[in-house]
Length: 321
Figure 1 (tube, one colour):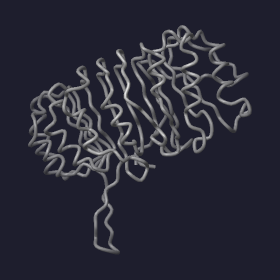
Figure 2: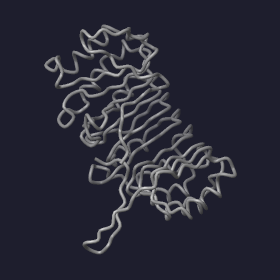
Figure 3: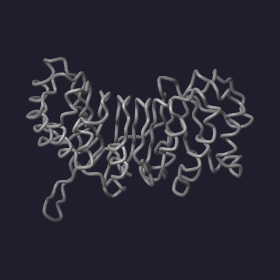
Figure 4: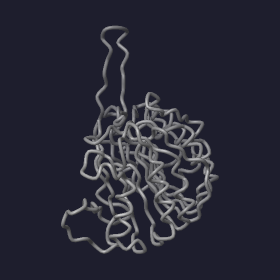
């Protein structure tokens, strides 16, 4: 199981916790940090809600200089969706004129399991900020991402224990001509991760996302199927890095990659946390590392075997609940 922690940075800027009321702290320049806004339902200002925190932030820091915002807890994780956060971001679009990066859902495991984070439709943020370059989301429950058109978004990433298939289909149908980095944690069906390889087909075909250079299809319980689809995917030819880590990748998927389209042009191939045997892993490294490809096959997962019934072997993704 991979621990989910607070973001140390966003968009190349160090994360800085916006202080609580009355807490003395020297603030950085507005554009020198990724501002982390975290509201606690158990704090002294719980009755005021996330809206009060938001308004105090805009009144304290020069909003015109803010370049990156990280949103932590905004309410009770199990009950309150991120709709209020999205509405506040949209309403402040004429003030946050330099905003280039947003991450919604920066909660670590001690605050909430990833499946407890209730999201909403986050695409209004893209519509409100046509110059936004990076959008990240943690938590797949309730998440929606209908197809959008955005000219400047360069990085889009979703961290989820279960990413809804409609989100994957929405991304695949979007017009994002500047997108260079796409990362999706697909998760497991038990936590709304109902995407399929067919949902990924438009992305893998290479007809969309002309600027894409990094593709991450991570944390999936059908990682072998994804690897087989990636092995014959036209989009791979223009990637510089590929990430299929955190899932249930086994010898079957790794062999499909080895027998598929050439991967020797990649600079990095991240497959860490896997269920690959060492002989197959060694054969894979020998095929790619001489060409300068950095291959990460570390952190082998542990299989569980059902000894009470038919001895079936179970493999688990690194992040689910």
